[in-house]
Image (cartoon, rainbow, N blue to C red; front, top):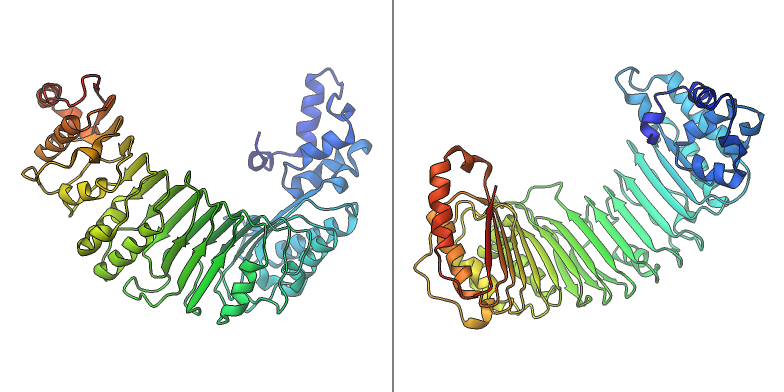
Length: 466
């Protein structure tokens, strides 16, 4: 039973029901305190505190739980009037009570999700209380209607290892920033201040940071920022803009992370992203939605972004990303060779771009072994008259997965091209689209046509399934 479903039941009734099922014998209460505290740590704090009514043994157990989780979302469910003063007061009093009565041992994780408009000073008091009890992981989801400043001790802290901050307002940073033990930093919805040096200090003051996620944040106040974190392993940037896609006056973000093994970017590149250095075993996921404006400029930025991913071993890109590259066709020749790339996954349907340009991209991947089409080619133009690739272009390809086959002439030509030129191909898995089953006769004809295609590899197995 998960914590959400647990909240629907009366804790004492569940306890008595379980005891009755065991002949009135309470097995759970025989467990050591440390194990019971560990069990309670998986519950929202509200449910953990509710166990105090079970028996004398349970009355104070919750006060030793090292994980606190407060969420006021119940106040906004359909059964409560928005901002009902009684419920708001109950919530605030409950948080005060827990922080006052709990054992003063260290807090491992403190999660708080609430609307700051109730009382900003009390929210800050709760955060200060957690910091004073040496909290290691701080997870704040704060809904703000007026300017709000977090306590300075959040950013000048020698104990915190995790900070997750979701806050829809300006991020006010103190003059001194030092978080030497921080390993995970997540920022969501914040607006960075008009102070490059202070924001720069935020990232440079975390020398052991391993995971950085900047999600739906506003960079417009900054001109240029450089993030140099040698220890960084995971970087996630969700950069979908608040403003128009046509507005490309964002920040130039340069990232130097020599040990990076996972990079995910989603957005329209309204900010310029430059990557310098990453591990040769890195996985990159790039999602640029289908473009509606400024296609050429975004295409050029996409080419530059790809130039920084030269050493990745695995690459997953959306069809919109491919489209962005194709809108910078004049710069495709500036792309480097991806000498370490062995895995390529293409997500989404191809639409207004041609197979010819797709193959230009494949030319840059001489060691590609696995090629996966999640949604097929879609409505690609027919470039079946193009010349063959140099031998090395598909010389390492071993496996092709092609999903959503419709049986168009373009698809058949392209699969034929792969079968003929991938000389070490071991397996091609082809999956029909859902609509293709409506015409079994046509499906049979296409299947026979595909099996009759010449193959460059004598050991290639072609499997066509629904």
